[in-house]
Length: 412
Image (cartoon, helix red, strand yellow):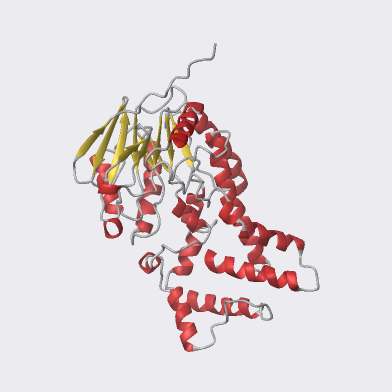
């Protein structure tokens, strides 16, 4: 187990929250000390591409042919977006969860970060969850589960008769069929599995949004230099507090039957906007607590976890440098004693790990999922001051180390 990183293996929610905050603050603070791993490997967005992910880890010598950890004390960072798109998401999550334990036992570390797609799933934004993914969660009882859910949904909508809603009770064969198509077998099991009490949902919610290892910062989307945050730990805490707050709002609104617990985020937002208008039009004052919950949830697009300027979504560091952005980036790195930033999220042209901003930013999403991006798997190794890219096809690439930050001359 490396001194600078402390994985959390607890079950009780209150204890988990207390220990998690303490451990993450410790991990992120110690990351800047001498106790940093001698070898760090970073891998970009996976999206269920299990064979490609495992293959590139073999190329780097982190796992063997049986997908067992052989990386010793190395640290592996997966930059987020394990989920969505690819059919083998469930297998990939199982692999990642197991590998995390194996690495820790060997004295190394595997740190999967939160990506925007993990956050989307937590919040019920399921646009990129395919029927093939849902099918891997289906069981022999899925038909029964879906039938009961349909009845529950009908009862929920029936209770809102009198309010003007675009979601109507499926009343004929055509609308019932569409509902069934929109909720394929395995849909409800998947929602439970990634929910706050589900096997995968609990694990996802423990992922950090950002980590600093020595003089490197690792984050899924990027860091907007204009984004105000005091520390790496504070930024991580802010993102994960929002996701925790979302869970609390969703559960409260579900208990109040203001939203249906299995609604997608898109349907829920449309329903809540209509519900808000209906409540405001009533002569009787609305429950201020519920009205407040609705207002907060409707503002989710401005949250750090959802904003295009937030660390899970920002793309401003994967395009040609602008003077203002360059100066802001240099100041940000200097503030945290970092030399470089590693990001994913934006698929790079030519499926190649690409440096930006004088090699201060390394973009490592090379479109690993072949059926979606026709790219290739890659891994960036940072070792002894050298930056080496391993590709799944066996090729390697040496990149220049980050350029030194400009030294400001003191004013005499």
